[in-house]
Amino acid sequence: MTALGFLYPGHSADDDYPRIEQLLGSDVRLDLAHTDIDEGAHRVDALREMGAPERLAKGVEQLRLAGAEAIVWACTSGSFVLGREGAQQQVRALATAAGMPASSTSFAFVHAARELGSVRVAVGATYPQDVAGLFVDFLAAGGLEVTGVHSAGIDTAAEVSAWGEAEVSALARAADSPAAQAILLPGTALHTAAYLPALEKELGKPLLTANQVTVWEALRLTDRRVNAPSLGILFTREPLVQV
Image (cartoon, rainbow, N blue to C red; front, top):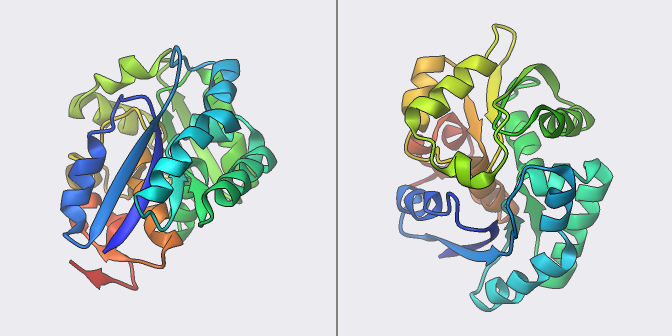
């Protein structure tokens, strides 16, 4: 059994994780510790506060006692708003507090795109334009070229959590460009786990979404690769551990 721990802000799309756990198979367990988010606003000041060390620390002990082998801060905006160096410090602090490998969703996007060999990526962000721009900067600092960014301008995570497949598809299509090798949809408040194969077929290229890459990153930290095509092209890469 591989036990993976996630610090998840609030409850917007946390039901993606039981779905993903089911699709991964019986030997992977996903444990969530919910962190406080206050207003859940997509503003730089609120996002910096959301990822403050004292907020994250509250859930670390819970995950450690649950037997987690790796821990991931399951929030894209609550990490990339710190910049690459700040996000690295955030992850180092988590790893030290937890006594295990740690990462965040922002780094998961960079690592997942590299896994697919996708250097040129398009971004479909639910955030306002200024916040989306910070994600683009983070990706660029990680060596990725952003071919274009589409901002939906949504102010809160609660609004994003109400979106269904039609809205997710529209966001991905609005972001796509012929030059993009993959499409990235940041925001762990966005439900995507149920739609990945259909959307990738529609788009004709890999789709990387926040909760999907977050779980993949935790598996990577524990040296696991699980073949789960229902979670998209990312989960069909070698080396594989067949479900």
